[in-house]
Image (tube, rainbow, N blue to C red; front, side):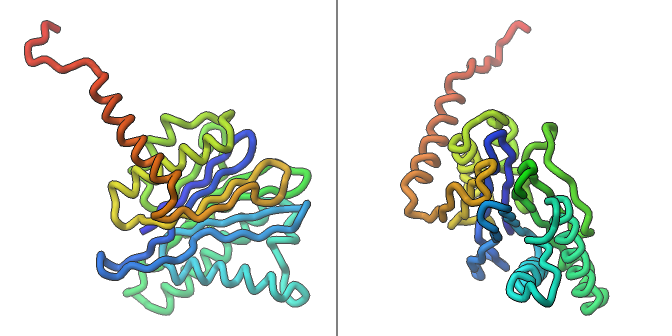
Length: 248
């Protein structure tokens, strides 16, 4: 399984993904699910993937190949005029890749090759943008009403983000919020696991402000995990006690 989050703040974008893929508790592997392309001073584009690994790797590989042969193929990542066009092309690649694999496997392939992708980034002269691309190739964009997207195992970490999110929060607080969200997911679901990949894109810089791989030895993440657990216990015990003999 997977857990990836892209979050839009006034100051930029905060992105985090896990790296675990597994087919049962005895077959666990680590694969990167966050990929970045940038043109200094002009644009930065990052994608995070969830779903069938073969399908998502095929999409990323096609994007990488277009980077290697710019004279022979249209390089949508560097030539697209807007992030909307980037999301459109990635959606087209995802839809065609899934369709090809399902067709090649007949009835056995139905529903087995689905995937989804978060697309984030900024092009010079435009606002940072964040998209969720579905297996069908269509997508939605983050807004004031929907300022973050999750893919994969979303249910355990979502309440944390909803309660703690503030669009005006600092990028550092955004990182802390996502770490709490991921810690809650890790505690609840063994199919999501360390290491985690973190990237922060500050508005109008067109390069990562911060990139970090969070491992089991990461002291800050350990502190967040232990502190959040203690804070929850304290908050629980500070609530009014329930009585079996209430008058109301």
